[in-house]
Image 1: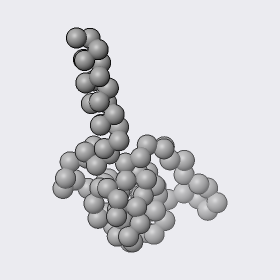
Image 2: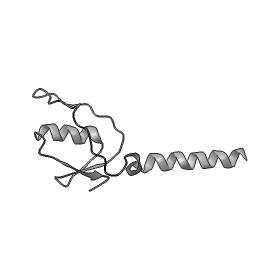
Image 3: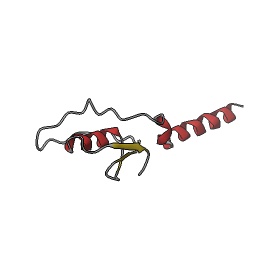
Image 4: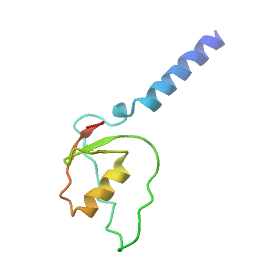
Length: 86
């Protein structure tokens, strides 16, 4: 019984980790308000959690940090299309 419970919990954990599209509800936008423009030559440090976002430029960004960094660099010309790969 414990073995079965362990396998089910492991399967649930792996499904949650590898299905990043389920992490954000549909219809929700990305809030980039906390990302400010950096001084010239300074790079933003982003975390490495994969939660893909499709931008209006047709590129897939690894997560909201990478996406919002590009939004700020383009003076908000880049727009959110949907969560997931393009």
